[in-house]
Image (cartoon, rainbow, N blue to C red; front, side, top):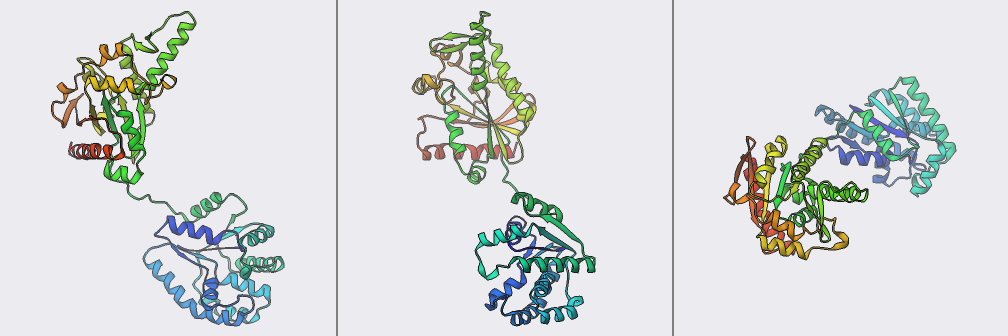
Length: 425
């Protein structure tokens, strides 16, 4: 397709075309020939009409050859303005010399299949011209009015296909209208291959949340290319657990008694063992409601303890998470988990994943032991869970990483290895 965008000065033609050139690289966008020639030859477009006309006719064959070459390649061509607009201004300015030549040569000119006219009241054009502040191309109202009328009559005489696009509205609407009129379709750059689901496991205070914060702070390109993770969305069961604690506070206030937990020092301990499975079903509901999108990584984060902890928990995850995902386990000793659990606690922020603390009674009862080492005796490899072959890597997360470089040195190799296992699963 070959199309031209026309319209009163300063309605956004150049700006819209510049945007389309950026977002649609296969589109050949051509600047206004009159302005290009006048600037190149340093001509005043209003006072040096004869010289400008001669330069335009000389430049026209090269411009039309460029358009034909693009056509032959199957490309869409979008040009700002056309010689019919210059003829309209010639009529408004009384430039009979150009009009006579134009009348003789009109049939020789390669014309667009589609004319897109950006339309707005004269006052909008005058206001935007003033804002633009380019006196060299400022056009007064009476000239605009005469030229606009001549151009409309010219299109009607020729039977041109003219699509009017209102331009006195928000810019995104104008751009969208032009894109739709041309039938353009944006093609995103192919995203790097990323792991869609990362199941992040480890004892409380093993560094899971800190790792997530590190990954979230990376530029998207670096995170995708070096760590093989896309835009991050976190499904952590701790906020869901805390919600149950708060609900129990309300039931207690109402005299009904707590349903799932009991108060323990300044925090809470879980009394209902079924609550752990409930939380994972809630996480599953979050995945079902919005599965990982292309270029996205959903991090499923949780801790479990006991002799059958992760065998049970992993078996409850959605088959799609297991089939498409990978597991990263952060290994710290029970003593290190206790130390960090105490160190991070802030009472006024005890509902925050970074500053909450598991009561030591709960730590001893639930998290002293888990079954990860039995499930995954090697540092890296594959688990079979619910019939799915799931890649995993175990990272020894001691000593505690503090600086940016600590995280890079520890987790870049681990995620590189996990990605290799995931690709070859």
